[in-house]
Every structure is written in structure tokens, then in C-alpha cells.
Image (cartoon, rainbow, N blue to C red; front, side, top):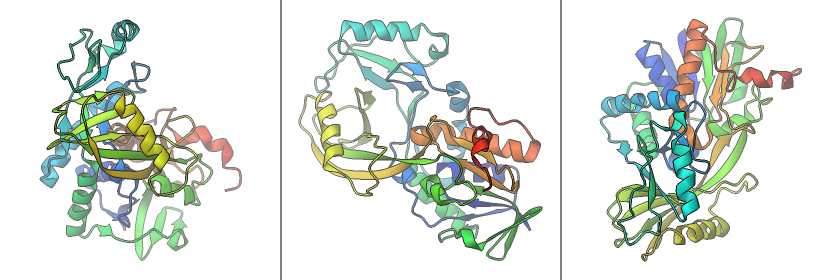
Amino acid sequence: MIDYIVVGLGLSGISFCQKLISNQKRFVVIDDGKNSASRVGSGLYNPIALKRSKLAWMGHQMMSSMDSYKKLEADLGVNIIHSSPILKTLLSATDVNDWHEACSQVDSKPYMRPKIIKNKNNGIHAPFGFGVVDGTGWIDTAMLVKAYASYLDKQELLMKHSFSADDLEIKGTGVRYDQIEAQHIVFTQGVKGQTNPWFSYLPLQSTKGELLVIESQELQEETIIHGGVFVIPLGNGKYRVGSTYNWKDRSATPTVEARDSLLQKLDCILKVPYHVLSHSAGFRPTTPDRRPLVGVHPKHHPLAICNGMGSRGVLQAPFTANSLFEFIEKGEDIAAEIDVNRFKRYILDK
């Protein structure tokens, strides 16, 4: 018998596997290589909700867990961390005043600079300069997922197929799946978790997001820009632009409407020519209260879940994976805001 079966190899699955490895736990991963969110996400890590210029929930704690990505870089031998401040475009005196007010908040001070910096890039529309958020950047999530899958495969820890719920047998002290017995099974399936029969009582949603990659040799910018959308430098004159949020569209293909929306917002930021290189779409696992789903099944304790990371998956995945591991192994409380028990009343007879 092994300790854990992990279903899904997105950011949450990788973060949980890292906890298992560091604690010398025996495990195997089931994943079909079709993770949507981690392959098309922007990969941004940023503790500030820039629309409100306010610290995101548990922002300090989640930023402290970012060291896990440095260990992943070392373990995998890849460069996935791209550090960069975020420059928020300020378009009016009101924007400047709002920024100064936000900077005066105690929680925001470690990240938001009170001093406005002048816009020195003629290719960007920021007549009142930029507000600066420090300690931010982006993770190359597509590279991370690919490299980690290869890492596990070489150690014969990866079962490369789709998980079949019909093949899982729940026992009193563990589970059995495809001849494998384990003490626990942890579901980190992303949007596929919507079809998980044991956690179907949870309000897991899929929110469509679309991204563009553009090229502009005239822009010459090396810092992340935010002005309604993010513009993330990728090098060689290429930039990632995003993202959209659509709770109704269930089509897997990119849409003209999303492209037009992104370009309209981008045109409010850029004052130089550019052209679109690619347009991609994917689905984020989200929840109505915008908090992850972390914990064990109320009736079947060998079953656990770590899902619903939304658009802040890079920051939330290491934090939530650690919370789940510490709960299972040591009985430490999971924060009430993310504990699946907040939806326990919906389970009924499931």
C-alpha cells in the first residue's frame, strides 16, 4: 500500500506532490496531460487586487509560499520564474489620489510603492505615470507542467490516462484503484472536478479565459503593465495579453468577442503598432465565493480535494496544498474560508 494517489497534474497537483516528496511519502499521479488552466493561464503572481488596489485574501501568507517555485526550478533544471514589478497605468489625478490612498493601508505597504514613477515609454499611454507593485512576476506554467510530468514519468510515478471514477473502490481505511491501494486519494482535477461523483455537491464552476500573444518591436518594454488588461513581456518583442472572464461560454475555442474585447483594452494602453501572433482559450476552476475548495469528504475520509484556484492559481496552489497536507497528516485546521465544510450542508445523501 502506498500513501497517496493524486488525480490531476496542474498547479495544485504539482504543489501537493512536492509536499509528498519533501515528507518522503509514497505516491502515484493519474493525469491524461490535458490540463486546461495551467497551460493557458497568464501565470501571474501578484498579492494585490489591482481593480481595487487592495491586498488579496491571505496575500502575505501566499506570497511566503512562493519559495516552492524556486525549489521546483532547482529540482527540474528549468527556468520558470520571471520576476518583474507590475506598473499600473494612471490616467488621471483621481487615479493618483486613489493610488496614494491605497498605499496608506498597512496591508498594502510591503508591495505598493507610494511614489508615482514617470512614464518614460512613448509607446504606452500613462499620462499620470505608473503605480508600482513590487515582489511580483509570472510563472511559466506550461513549461512547469510539462517538465514535472516528465520528472514523474522518469520515476514511474505517473499513470498517463484519464481517471475513471468507476474503478475507484473506497475502503474503510483507504482506497483501491487499478490494482493500487492507498491510504488517501487527493483530487486536484481543475474543471474536471465538476464530474467527480464524490464532490459533486461542491459549487465548482468553470470560467472561460482567453489570452493573446502579440508582437511589437517598437514597444520595447521589459516590465509587466496593467491597464485594464495585463501586458506581460515574453522576450524578443513578444507579449502576452489577458485575460478575459466568461462564466457562460462553454465552447473550448477562442471567440471573436473576447479577441475584440482584449484588443479594445490593449489599444487604450499601447501607442505603437503591434500584431496578434496567437489567441488561446481555457477554463479556470472557480467558486461562487472566489475561494478554493480544500479538505476531505465529510463521509469518506480517505477522499480529499484541492481545487477551485481561479485566476490566482500560482499563488494559491502552494498555500492550499500545504494546508491540505498538514490537515491530513497532522490534523491542523484548514482556514474556514477555503474549507470544504463550508458547503457541507449541501451533501445531503450523496
